[in-house]
Amino acid sequence: MSTVESLQACMKQEDALITEFAAILEAETEVLVGPGDIDALHDITERKSGIAHKLVELSQTRDALLAEIGLPAGHAGTEQAAAQHPQLSGVWQALLSKSASANEINLRNGALIDVHLRYTQQSLDALRGLGGGPASTSTYDAQGRGTRSAPGRKPIVAG
Image (cartoon, rainbow, N blue to C red; front, side, top):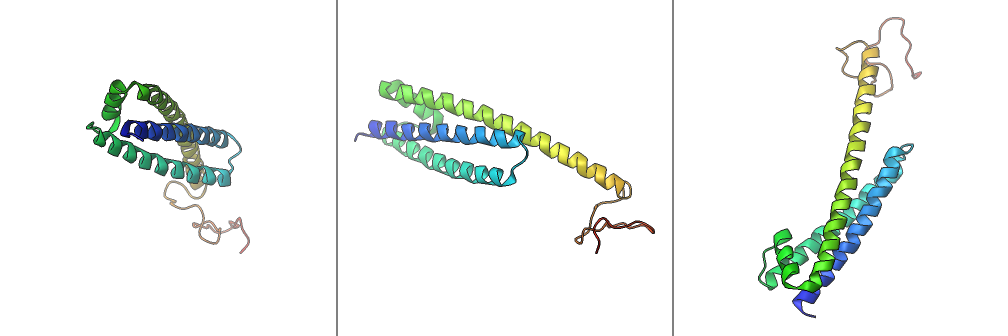
């Protein structure tokens, strides 16, 4: 197999992984807008991490193959390779398109996570306000009792 054929095979593997990554991101979106399945979100995070690791490895392989044919690493080198070797052009364009799409989904998910974090922070702030005003830094202690108990206040959890 020639270096250019190896480069094409590497890019096809990247393309397949990006497709899988985008599907995982779509599943993440469903969890983020759904009832909040933490276990599913954990599983998705692990799967995303595994795919990201494989993509990094393939990117390093692609860079090594580009170096073998005298081209620079990364996007610039791959652009040059696609221009010099027409058989690479189609897979490179597909990879760019799918990568852009996955990036858009990832940005959307990041915005959803940001909304969830802001809502959670506002909820915690509201609970802290009920627990004794702005000076209160913690709503509950390790036993589930209010940390700033006032006389006559009953704990939420019986100790």
